Amino acid sequence: MANHKSALKRNRQNEKRNERNKGYRTLVKTLTKKVRTEAEAGNKEQAQKELKVAEKVIAKVGGKGILHSRAASRKISSLTRLVNRTA
Image (cartoon, rainbow, N blue to C red; front, side, top):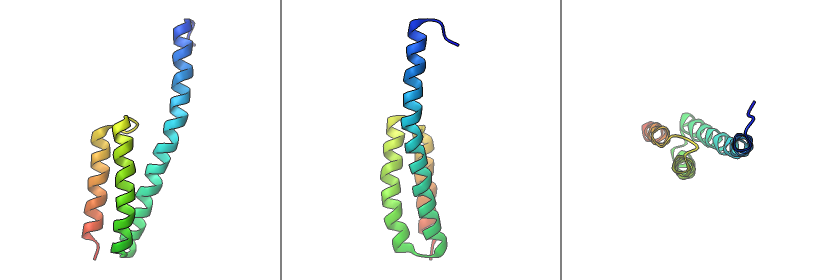
């Protein structure tokens, strides 16, 4: 446990940030799942719409540092390839 005043404050800040970022990470997972289900069902138009929404959110989360920027790019890339491969 932290003893210094600054360390205690840092712990409080980290807890707040962790709670805030948890929502973003959950949102990314949900949107990714929507894109994947639409792509696997063969609904290319709907999958493209979901991809557009997901891509915007993932890029935002990557830019804020909640996800690593390269991890965000990798997620966007894999989803795009999945949607493009659907018939």
